[in-house]
Length: 574
Ligand code: ADP
Ligand code: MG
Image 1 (spheres, rainbow, N blue to C red):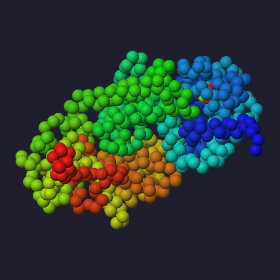
Image 2: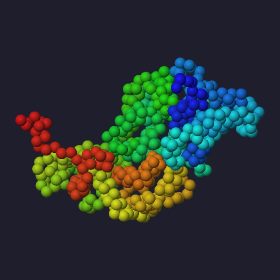
Image 3: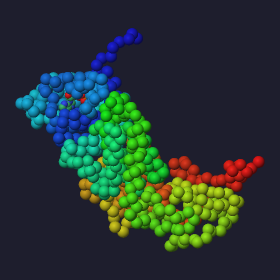
Image 4: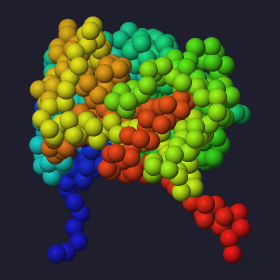
């Protein structure tokens, strides 16, 4: 075949593959256009996961009738004033979003600038442009996308369920709403209002997006280094989620999902929160534009920093300072502390806020005995007798044959809980424990819909929930093994798990993930001081549980150092 030039429709469809990966990307582009147009109020409506219909309405400056055909043309933009791509003050600049959406689905743009008598509309369907026609309409712009990806079936195949796509759309709108707190935002999904927010300051917007309960616990952070400013809110180590879905970063007003920033956040919390858990964060970074390249990624979600190290250390420093605020120390610990061995240092902050750990089923004696002398080493136990807890994370034990045993308390307990839940499930049903007072958990409309959709199967796992008004579910029972779990945290984790998995995942696999997450949710945390009796109970339970030597995520729960190993390490052995 000879070389030929592709026609514009094909070029736009190819671009659509990069710019509009999924409905949430279209939502993001349309809302960014509304923000660039100086809107004070933006309304977003999603139907059928955004594949069916997306509508974004704003009261911004509008598009003059004569410019409508240009707006949907590729590489046509009213925004780029700095052709060197350094000082980009708008969210958009590539002139690619509208043509890409119009190539993949049916796009209709209705707009009326303040000075124009009536509105005008242009429609593009699968790349075919129709005439501009006058219509009635208010000042501002309304963009409707229908049947997204009907013209690009290859892409459509890769979409997840409507529920997952709707969740991703909602996450995108929440992220944008945090990026522009001064703009009113409403979101409606399949006819139900998810939120309707007035113009707010950052703190008010954070409370609206994260919910009052969580927002009250957030710590404020601030760091300034030369012209780089980082401000925002992060969760204390005691408040984590099952996924990173609740981390929102905004760089120079642009909502981003930048790997460098996410990694910096992860590093800042490392050792303070259990592996696999994620903090909440809403962070705004202001950085001189010449230190930033926003033109790295077609969807503009990733950035390139001229001084990545400086940004990383600014973030880690600010987060770690906030996590160490002494105010948190004022909270009384909810566990009694043994005073033997190493146990004299103040309890780490990471442990605060966790309710008393659930060690039910491990034959824990009532009341905690604090031994004055170290327990005697008994030869019959393979994992030995606990002699100390170090870093409030590892149990140190000595076995009868002189081996030094190290156990990761969180990983080990998580594994035991998971094995128990699994065994209970495989034997029929996981016993449910009715709550004395059913708990009301406030959640977003999409999360509620997904939870209720899975309610029957969740009941089989011992988690009984039902609808409770428009913005909440009622938890009637939790798995008996997790009896003392905080029902709200548990249900949120399950909602996040359901939001993450798509249609391709069989429900059983998904429920398996729910199960592992439930186990993790209630397992004794790293950073919690254990009484000797608790350590003892954990070690004994591990000995009688096959498979207890690795955690559900495949990491080891036990390490052993023999006397020979120690001698070699100290250079004593020949
Ligand atoms: P970009 O945002 O990169 O310029 P788009 O394809 O998203 O590219 O939009 C093309 C142009 O259409 C914009 O430059 C802008 O002039 C106009 N436009 C799009 N959406 C709106 C809107 N909601 N209000 C006003 N103008 C808009
Ligand atoms: Mg744009």
